[in-house]
Length: 226
Image 1 (tube, rainbow, N blue to C red):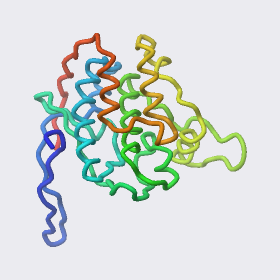
Image 2 (image 1 turned 30 degrees about the horizontal axis):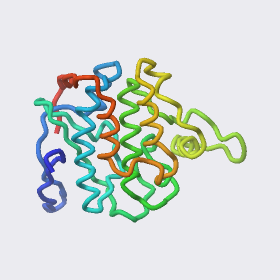
Image 3 (image 1 turned 45 degrees about the vertical axis):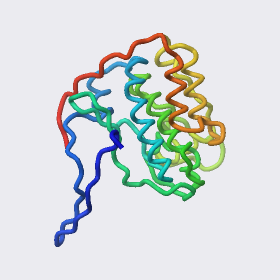
Image 4 (image 1 turned 120 degrees about the vertical axis):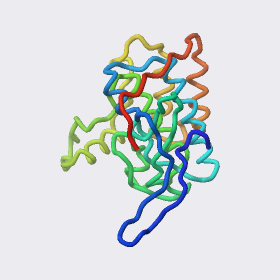
C-alpha cells in the first residue's frame, strides 16, 4: 500500500537480527505535535486521516489488525506524504491480544477480547483527539478506582478509566471545533466495538462530510530519523 512503510525482509546475521525497511526522511506526528505546540486544524486532520484510514482499511482487508495506532507510528515525509508504520504487535483478526500503548488501547485490548477493525478505529479516534486537542489524550490514568483495590500502575489506571469513565469531550481542549467533531469522536471511542464506525474509511468519511474547510499544508518536519 502506498501509505504503509515498505518491509522487505527479516535477516539473521550471526548474533544480529534485523529488519530491512524503507528509509523515511521526515518526522513522526508525535514529534511534529510537540514541536508545533498547538492543535491541528480540521483541514490538516483530513490530510492525515485519509491516507492512514486507507492504509488501515487495506490491512483490515487482509485480516490484519494493527493494534498500536498512535501519532508516533504515523510518519510524515519531508514531501508531505503520510505513512503508517510499526506493525510489530499486529494480530490476525479474531485473535485475542492485550498488547498496545495504554492511552490508545480499546477496552477489548485491555480485557483480552476479540480484535476487529473497530479496535484500530478506537485508537485512530484517540490519535485524532490528541491532534485536535494539542497533545491531550482522552484517558491518562489520573483518576482512581473509587471502590475495591486501587490500581497501582499507570496501565491499570488507564484501563479503569477506559472501561468506566465517559468520553470526555474534545471541546474542553479546543472549544472552537464544530459540535459534529465531538459526535464523530464519541462514536469512534464507543466502549462497545459494534457501536463504533464500521471501518476506518467510514470514520474518515465522517470527517470529510464536515466540509467547508480547505486542507491546510502539513508542518515542515523539524528533523530526520530512520
